[in-house]
Image 1: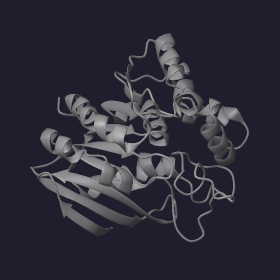
Image 2: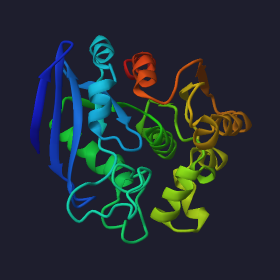
Image 3: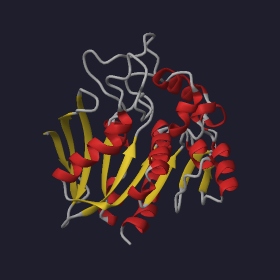
Image 4: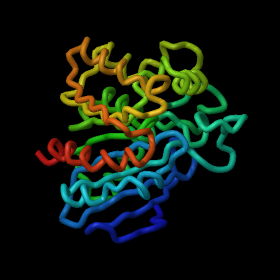
Length: 277
């Protein structure tokens, strides 16, 4: 691994690292905020949305003061493989290809070789982090925004034994039924919708996946609310399954980092209740 940047901030260190990934076959980067103090410390994973990388939340998320207060390490991975030879949407669309890995292991060509973000996030990166940083892997939480909220929900529901806390900010709740999700899952996984079930939070809950607690923050003025995000689908699935869900609609807030930075510190405090107990 190579540390490519480091800044002192809020009584801790904000760092950016690069490493060669066996899963994606490319160099990958991630950011990590390390509060001062003796480790090991709990870790909160933040998965970013379409068009983003680790840099967006790192530069605009306003999370470091809360992480320092609660003694929580925050790690922000990238959203897709990148580099020469990595396939991209042939029309250059923002919602597929580079910056839009959807946290799946693609099975269709030409995507299957590099787009293995599920295995990268679930297996490879946690092992790397555990080997190099003062993290307590018995105390993990996960959250994310939009496409990253979809990733946080589905990874949390598939591997509940790994996480003490799961949340999301404006997540894509039912990707099988929205344009972003149908495009991405159809091209990465093929037309058989049964293959999409592992990557749809509502379908996972319908199939019996459960979490002890789940928190979702959603902006009520989000322009993607009705067509892409569909939090009412998640609420209906949770209600039918008696899955606890704390869904908060925030009046006046949209899909941007003005909203993310407004709710992320409170989400960190919510995770800390579970991570520090």
